[in-house]
Image (cartoon, rainbow, N blue to C red; front, side, top):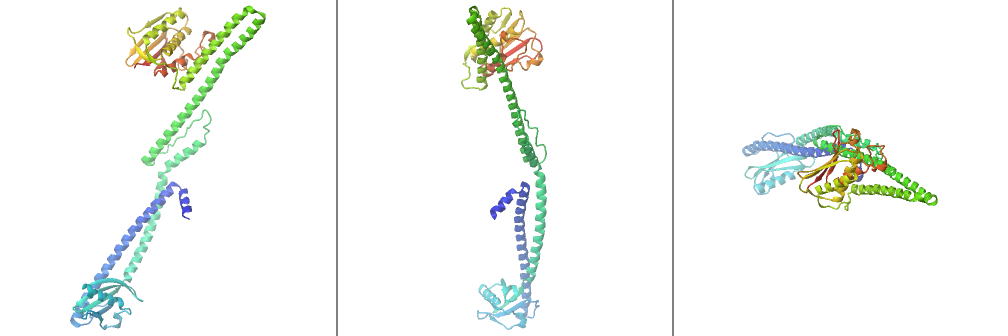
Length: 478
């Protein structure tokens, strides 16, 4: 039974449970207050009755001392007994009236004995057979004489019953009002929590398996106090985080699809070329032996270009995975010397592009992988040569700025269109869509350069100002 009650209580709404808990606590408080008030009132009325007994006995004691009889004022339903205690054993005197003593005289005699032993006035509440509860008081009237008076407590009992009844009704009404008012107040205060629950249920109706899934819902109902406000803020922050994560996931999936499609497209071309040259080589071997060497050179060229593409893809994958054995072999090297070597190689490979180098006269030592930084420099310089007409000047500037080293590579060509500036570092992206692959470039060069510089803790950026193309490489100085 208790288990079922607990289960039913747990199924109630939080506001109702809190209101019932408040009601139970109030009931305990009301019970304590009612008990204390009832006890105090009974003691107060009992003390008043004791005082009344004392005043009556004072008058009766004077009468006994003067005339030997009870001539004082008598009260309705009160009982009186006079005992001669000169022999140390109480001996009941004959009453003036038969109605002065109850049939059950034993409680009065017992109280007279107690008064003799204690030699002071004695008070006691007893039950007289057939009469009910009585308050007894025994006192010495004169030496050897003890007066015992008994007053009914019916008025006290009636008053206490009325008081308890009034308390029960008043406390019951107060408890009902308190529970209902508390339930309404709690429900109003918990409305923001209901709003959050409604928002959470609304989220479940969204299909989050779609790549473009978002969470537009937020808990925006105000109120509830600082604690609810803190919970609402945390709840909305969580939704924002989930929404951002879904957006990042969708972007990553889209980027992955585009990457796979672009990689398949880039690999399909050399594979088709290899297949075609293989067929031509087979035909030449049978019918035109003098063509075999030409077809074999083309086969090797396509295989080499496909190998470069695969190497770039593997390098990007390893850098993206942040492998412990990432393709970096760090050591102390001079950036100025590395730039000079890259410039010499560029002049030899592209004599139609005049190159100027501005660098400090002292070495600029960095903690880096010289081979990978040289790969980045060669990539950026080759990019400047491929995308500009012959005769376009190219400049390289090396500078140390505080705790960073900066390399700026600038060409005086036509520049990159504004619409393409934000995408030049995307994988497989080409500014010139019509450019043939024979002139190199699969759209991975700048992506590889950015990933390698990031692996060194630096950045590579494109100047967004119109005009010449300026790439800036920033590396940390130890």
